Length: 174
Image (cartoon, rainbow, N blue to C red; front, side, top):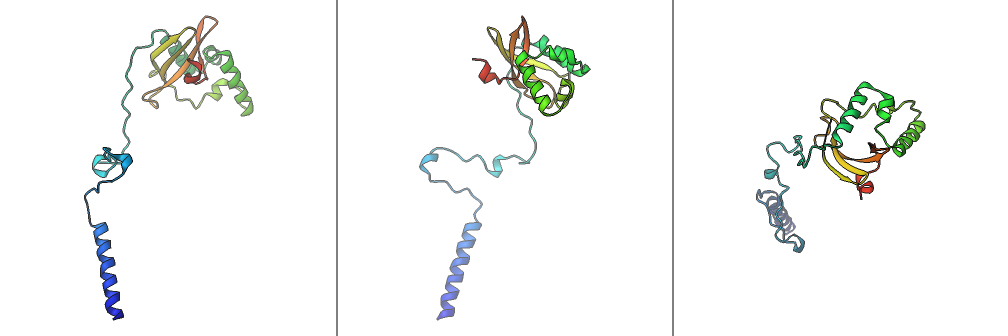
């Protein structure tokens, strides 16, 4: 009797195991919070190579930043020449103070040395989507191929000239 009982439990367990692992179709989820939501994170939707690197879709360009492009292009040229005095002219006084404090904390002597890890390619340097509000502006800068969509930078008019700030655009452009 024990052998018969053990066999019956083994067959039932094996049947459950096969039934759970044997299906190749998706099982619909019955969840009140996911009504009408389709699971798109499946192997069939991942394409041929799920781990392949994909290039991001370029952001839409609203304008070519006619005001800030000359400023950023000049900064990129100064960076390429490693011209410390020229680079300093493109940052606000508050930003320079902040950078100098960080340089001191890290025992770095020059701004050129401090910025050496920035990936700036003067041939690629570009600016787009500028928005100006009084003496502040935000634009999307693309310093190199490493940033295919670039990133937003806050510019502040200081002494009649546009300068870059290290304040996040969300905080500084209100």
